[in-house]
Image (tube, rainbow, N blue to C red; front, side, top):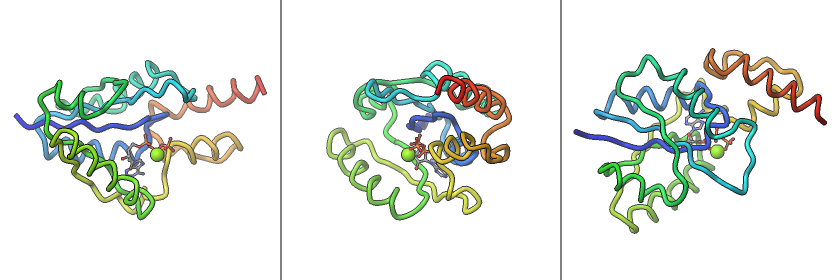
Length: 163
Ligand SMILES: Nc1ncnc2c1ncn2[C@@H]1O[C@H](COP(=O)(O)OP(=O)(O)OP(=O)(O)O)[C@@H](O)[C@H]1O
Ligand SMILES: [Mg+2]
């Protein structure tokens, strides 16, 4: 059995994430998409909501499950008995940060990181930018999975009403 963790904030999951998850699922027996909990950062969606949206968006992938983790990702990988982390690389900014993280994670536990080059059609996508564009009324329908789109617009409308 080969398995890998696929970590991120997924606030919310985008089609860029889904592309990487789908490709990773074709290379490993099991992928555990892991919502990393950051107590200092309040998201647009709660961790439970992000897990639910990821679950709905990956329901067609039989070897993908969704989890969350607080702490060192490598500890979770070890708990699962996995020796790999998978990540997407959109460009040089991702690379500079991810290389350092990957080297640190390998030094800590021997868990290695495998990178999937972003689909060029998605390499400009991030959750933050999608949220920003949607906040100002831009069309993001083809940037997020169908399960996410309506909930994203509803949440942004709630936030805009509060502000
Ligand atoms: N469009 C994309 N194509 C390929 N990989 C991506 C894409 N967006 C994010 N990723 C990868 O997904 C992982 C998790 O990323 P994360 O949850 O931080 O997403 P993000 O879109 O960068 O969100 P944020 O804007 O909140 O940082 C990272 O490894 C990141 O490189
Ligand atoms: Mg990011």
